[in-house]
Image (cartoon, rainbow, N blue to C red; front, side, top):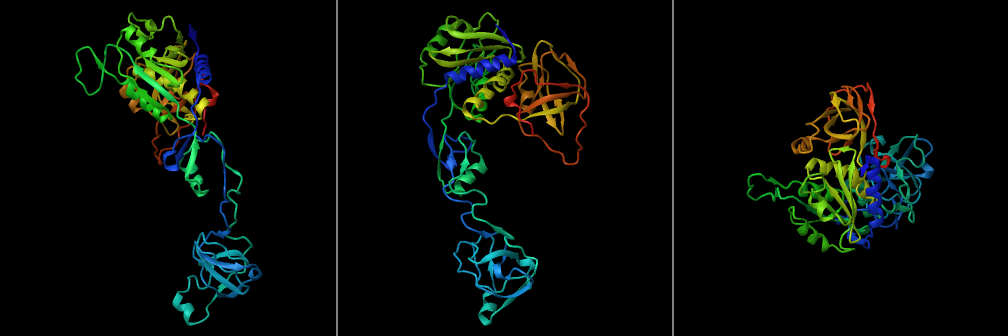
Length: 437
């Protein structure tokens, strides 16, 4: 069966959506909840700020003393963390940033606008009554943080499905929460096939290669918020693979993901082992990553990716990662930008080609060729470059869409390149995954 990229994206999303039966939510300490998704709305139990407080180090001024410049008696200072007595007319209280505003105070004058522009010491105040002269252009509310100006008690602080980053966890902590209810992790059983693969760390016999796929995909899945179980390496014996898959039961995992054994060779072990199953084997108009498999095993969703490492990670980025975002809210969508090609490129017009590149200052430079084995080039890239179906070649200076998969280097002195030339569109990339800055 032949599919477009968009058709297979929809097929994978539908498979996971119908086959996903999440476990109950978990309650985690905030320090353990980074990167997780909220299982329910969280309402603020207190207002933020919980009381009117000072935005500056300065003097709290009574409402009656705001009109015109005034020389006022200095009251007792108000440090943060204390409850001050009411402020009397004719007085100004030294107040520190974040300290509670006293009753009667209507504004804060920064210390640098006072005369003198320094706070009196305790010794100064002990010897005699001291005064301060304040300017006459002080408006009510100046440098006052009003209670509830950030959020009011009872309002929704964070909605269900929100990804918990540093800012979100900080908000929960500010609201007094030390624990939070989060959605369960998506569980993946990951296995790699092939008689030619050997575990890293062991001796490498002639004619064999080290298994990169398991580490590559496990890391990508964990970055995407999944809980991954690695299966031992499986060879090219269909009976051994069938035995491993027979141990899978509904509810034991949310997805079985395999690599290798789904192409057109004579020893395609996954194809052979699953010939009588509910798994479909497709040819997707994608390079690399054309061979794909999807279906169910014992009621559990199954995906089969090609065996070459770059094909496997491109398959993950194009199909599985977007589907995980849709059904679990984790991970966040990848940023998709428009960039200028630094060089010309050719692409098979009947396929959506995904090249690796380095994006910087609005331009993208291709890294390595289109081959599906070029792991060194993948490791050097920070983006995937999309050359959709119908595009046979693009000249240097043409515009393309790139998906950021790594950090972008910055050069503050380099000017941004002008965008000129023709533009290659997404060619079937799902708009839900397109996150423009």
